[in-house]
Image 1: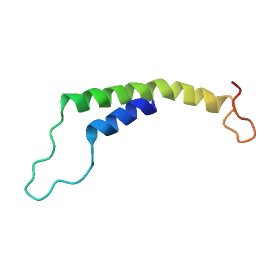
Image 2: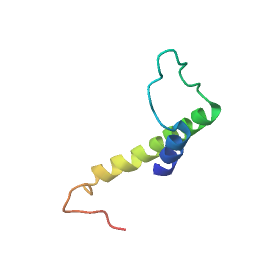
Image 3: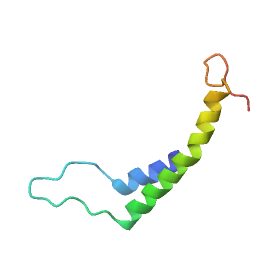
Image 4: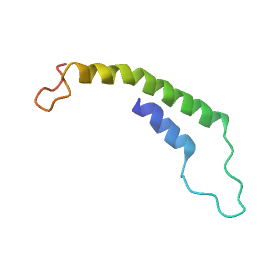
Length: 66
């Protein structure tokens, strides 16, 4: 998941508000594709995260076993 979000951050670049009179940045195809991949990675991660917490592994005294 973090790889997909790193790609998304690289595509977005520096976030800053537009200057007065400046047009907002256009939504590029690369940005849409990176955002879609990040969303897919998150949706793949959610069931794993929920299973992790449902089994009690999330407790500090019970780390997950490899």
